[in-house]
Image (tube, rainbow, N blue to C red; front, side, top):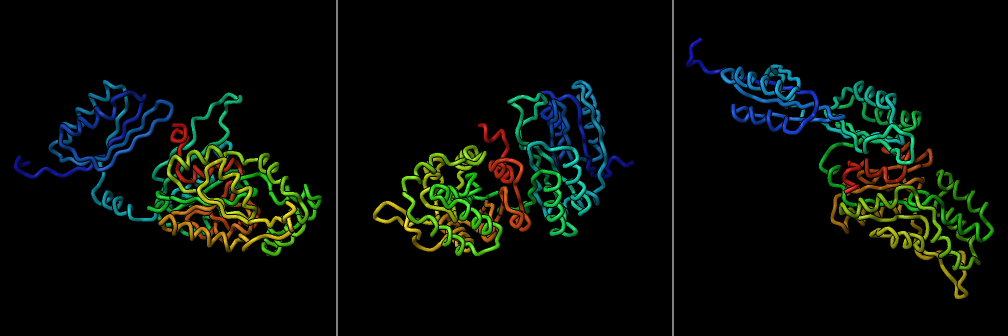
Length: 412
């Protein structure tokens, strides 16, 4: 071979595995740097102190032999295994071309995630023609001992790429599977908006609190069964929300407003609210309560947890300090919640795609479908069926995992 002949360009995939130790990545990349190799891609994972490092680099045939020799000697000293494979340029260009394809983030969570649940999800991903690029665990490491400190939630996030054969069918299959196997799942397009959500709006009753306040008021007024029956019918979407609201408020006529303070101070707060709000506030999110319930209780939660906005219904109070059975202003129903979501996005000067809505009832569906990310939380069957994402197995702080938060971030 003529020494003057131009050296052939080579693309090499390097895989290193073995016991993790300080300096492996630095040592390997230093060898590549000294030999003027161009790193095209790099990735590393560590599971139980075991390293898996992959580097795709470009060099030429005049240097590759020396690179291989140095890497083999050094990895032998480090007591890690090394493998090389040549990547054809056509294959590399096809791989590069795929980066413009659709990308999705699929998140699964629950009290415990089993091999069966994970296998079912990954099978759907494969059958739909999508490829998994990366997998990461968002929750802390899981202890084996069955004690009080045992983890109460588990979350895994998949980064996938490609074009699904039938996106809607895939979403339906995920939701049906999650309900059947008792876990939660979210599938979101991985775009600039997914990474820059700024406003999150919550329903209040049966979402931020584990009760319907109007039912609590009705119990004090002695009309609990009547009001509760109307509430359930409205949440199932069987009757118009405004009609049901008017009928329920009328039944509260004559109730002394002093009971509202006692109810507020004893509200059963949903699991995870405090943890979620701390993380959202620290991360700069704006938060709002958009409720078909009552302003008095929304304002109580605003003071307690630091919500930025509250929009709910105002009960009319007579001069005698008792409820008149009427309300003031327009009812905050499903349509109004959707309008408020859009209004707050304008006030905060953000795209509607940067918003999130969380709720449980039929009157939440308009805002769930309008928001960039709509999450049904411990929702009624009708809402689950129509929502893109659902959380039913853990507390409301599960919302954080759908946003990509890791436990390690939240514990800082």
